[in-house]
Image (cartoon, rainbow, N blue to C red; front, side):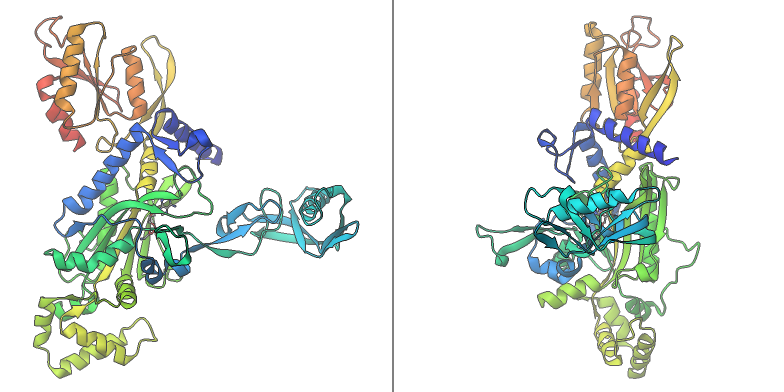
Length: 586
Ligand code: GAP
């Protein structure tokens, strides 16, 4: 798709979202708030369905995952331990001319000639501040001088006209290629990048001081680590097991963009899946199952190490997306290279979706080792290790020589060269007693990004010809029935026929406890179908004269069932309708 076609498609999606009540800008009547969004009636239903599909797939349909619903504000020490206070930042640059703020890595590279100035003077006033402007091929140097005068005017007494400013020390530097040092909008020099912490700060209690600073959580994951031991101790769970959580997260993004894609408030769906360290698997089963192309990932096996578990979760998440209509035609995968990995991660794969504005991350699946639990154990001073009876029993029969050989082998395989043999020996001694910090595989998805992906994949326009031979564009949201906001719309053919209305209302009543049903009696039937096409309702049911037996007995008690995607119609008995629909939306 060309760039123009892609941006047109995106504009149409955004406009449909507003027109049909999927997504509105937050506080729109006050001019909106950048990076915040509200979900209208259809959007709220869509989001809820997506949330439910995740919750069911990741927790309810499994017996090795339990849920958590933690608070949004945690003790600030949590964010110090997790590394967010010190390192959760993006590089930020400011335009020296307009003060507009950008994420340094998102500045579009510019090429051309840089005009440098050492300073400027006007009357008795002088500035020795250096400034530069980039001019692109074909642009006049006068443009650079005009920008520079506007910049220096700020430094001089109010009212100094830019034209009265004399620029000093002008030099030209040709051959600037793909530089990110200049504002693409006006060519002005940008500041050097500096880190900008993305956590939204607030204060707890009545006094605003540094002592009661708190943060709105930038991810839901940390609460899971912090509550890990409570959950482990209060539930009959055994490693491997997971803790799942869905909830709001907040990031003070420098540049919220691409509709809801990068927002300041969003919802995450995260699973922390705790597994035995590979060393424990080796002690229990003699070796660790190695991943290879074509390995059977369908059912977890006791001898799986972190790599098999990581691959397993990638496969599980792929199957999940497929089950809600996002197949491998719209998804892609990015395996982070060793030098891109966070220092604690052993592997991370990003599941990407082909958005109209580019192929971007939908979910990250990281193998995080025991980093998080280790950090919280260290910072809180509370032991977070688990005791594994089976492991202790497996080690009981080991001789001293076996143990030394195991320590040697573990030391030889260490990935961190700074780790000493003594440290390895202490870790192994703990393992021999059945104690360890579990390792973690983390599939972390964004609900709002998923909603945007589902809206993008569903959006379609096709040319159709009506009964009178007139062609028109049909806009249709081809949601998978499982996630469609409305599952079925019910219409009486005519609103002034009480027997049709009564029958239609009766059908609505019989279905509404089982699914989201929409009743509509206004307008021509074709218009009603079109409205539901835009809402993405997969099925429409019309109660007509056949239904109430006016055209003979053979179709009495049946309704017209219209399929959104094919627009085909068929008759179905009212008595069969509920089961027929439930089978398709489950
Ligand atoms: N605990 C790991 C973690 O938070 P992340 O890659 O920063 O990892 C996970 O976030 C997911 O959360 C992303 O893949 C994305 O779907 C969603 N997400 C992150 N930042 C977001 C934002 N500013 N707006 C919308 N969704 C976001």
